[in-house]
Length: 398
Image 1 (cartoon, helix red, strand yellow):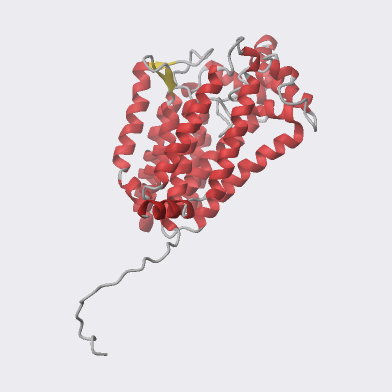
Image 2 (cartoon, rainbow, N blue to C red):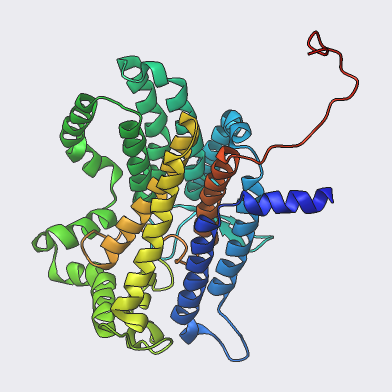
């Protein structure tokens, strides 16, 4: 009976309004990745390895999210020193054992585990570590958040992971960290004058950052979108090719789409990384405008619902954990869609729940697990009936 009661409480306290859309998005994502890799599947094989890895990562991610959801988030945030050390050690390991993505000799963003045959992207794990540690840091400084010493410490807290991520060549993830950093500072009530000072400092330091931290390949990607005349015609065509093909695929979909598994560009592998960073083009080409609207609607619902959970929490740190998760997912959606529409340069960022990749899918579900934990332990619980027998009090006779 106790097990049955526990299971009932588990279901009653689980935020299915968040979990179900996440499951739908992941199922949608696996289907789109399967379509994008269909032309690569050899005879006798049901699905491509990328689809298999994504499916396994999603299943493991769902399990971890549910497991995290039954752990009180207050216990999790007390482990912030351990979380910080694990995240930093994994990032530092890249400088010795880091592996470059295909065609990106200027970056080393993966750690290969040969015995397991898998690749791990530490920056994804570091995102979750940053949300936890930065939320805790902001909460500890809550009463003196606008003192200049507090701002300096928070700035250092953010610069360390952002600097490490940029140094490994992962500018896309670094930009997500910036979104989380700025968003949580604003929500914590930091004075606007500090943001103005940061913008001025960033503008002054931009030329130095451009020269020191950006590789020639990364610079070309920015120039291809914002100043194509600065590039040689042959260089421009090479750099812009991925986005150009993506736009062609989106245009080919129209309103109704070419049909599932029937996209000309998708099924012939004409859009590079269509299973990964450019998976949105697969949705647009094969399912059309309405498919894209459905996808964006589900993603928006997840982000808005997480914000709703944040607004109904009882303490500051749980609110920040939720907002950090919403900012992470929302910023990745914004950046990825911007890349696919050629509004932003290609900077290598996945579309949450949709892109292939084990690390990115696990990372998203770790964030979902944190939000589920906040929801569960902020939910009003049913009172427990109990009786105390043979207790004597001064009021026994009344």
